[in-house]
Length: 137
Image 1 (cartoon, rainbow, N blue to C red):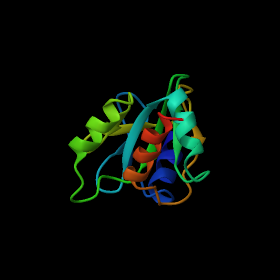
Image 2: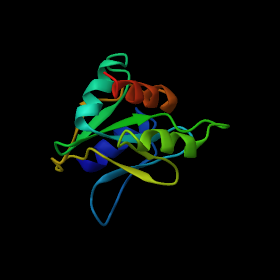
Image 3: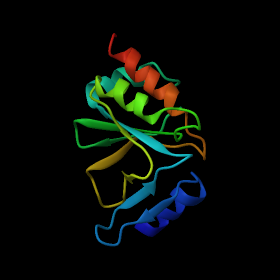
Image 4: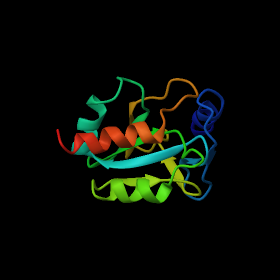
């Protein structure tokens, strides 16, 4: 079942997903097309209301953290500036060459809140801006 989910992530969502043989979970390589933002749950709930419903794949990790899966950092965009602006919100960007650990069958700690629809993910700038705006809501 894990291999099937990994293949689904690869074929339908066009994620560079792979199974970690040591841990058994599914991970995705971040890079030009994929990044993540790890957000405290309370802030994530507010930010999600500022985004188009269903436009951002989001999964939870336990009860305290949500992860927004976004497009990667575009050329000419400063990952350092992004990291600093999100630091003040308690948000951790997951950028290349790091990996995201995705929801995996048999691992209840991670589950989808809003599943991906096809290969598109919103720009990281758009999601980061919504998170920053949510700090004032």
